[in-house]
Length: 322
Ligand code: AKB
Image 1: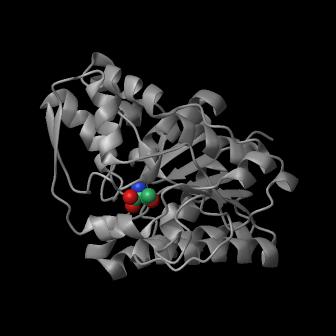
Image 2: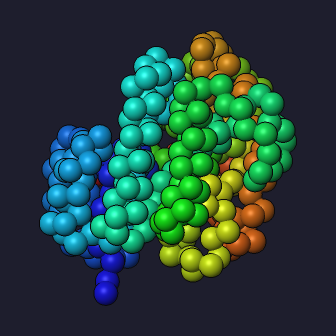
């Protein structure tokens, strides 16, 4: 039987590109996009779309039954910076949606679940350099608390009920097609847009704040790769560390200046600095590389070329609408 995929939160930064890529692989009709509100016309026209509030379990089930869905990718979440402004709302959204989907999988309405975790599961007591797969995890943000708890729920549903749930701890994800919203790593997307559009950028993190980052193409490939991996190769049922590169605002600035020499940056750290300071600088993702052959393609140099050559082009105008 072929797979039918439901994406919850399909209009977000990762959901948009994931939907597009999954439709290329599985066929448009096999990939049901959904979000709490309608996306752009181009997005709606590229395949089936349903309005779903991820807090409404019955509605998720209705759509699963309507399309005979076999896999769910739960991409809806409130990120670190917004989560600190609305802690209880972030907790409700991030946890309840996951528990709904895990319950639906436990009751055999679906066969496989993807749920993203984050480097935010780590806190200031975790090692900052080469942060291991398994280590101390005492997150300081509500987003991090929800992700670390979610990881344990995934592991629990897998070991107790055999639910096939798979997860990755995303670093900051950088893309030119859809902008992120409410994250601490968002500066690394904004900086490219401002460099192209205004030639200058005020950064909300200090110049030497090193964080793990990844180009969107790698994030999408990793997501699909872990979902397509053989069951027995998935040894971590909490979530896998995932890495590609780490850099500071100063280092990304220098890379951009190779293409736009007149680009300038100033620094005005805000409440997000404390969040960033609690996170790892470099992640050890050797478990993902060993277990299911993860390998990144994009480094800072290649990503910068891609970002700057696509922002502001016809390509970008079209794809932003997806
Ligand atoms: C955020 O900054 O909150 C996210 C993340 C690292 O999970 N991009």
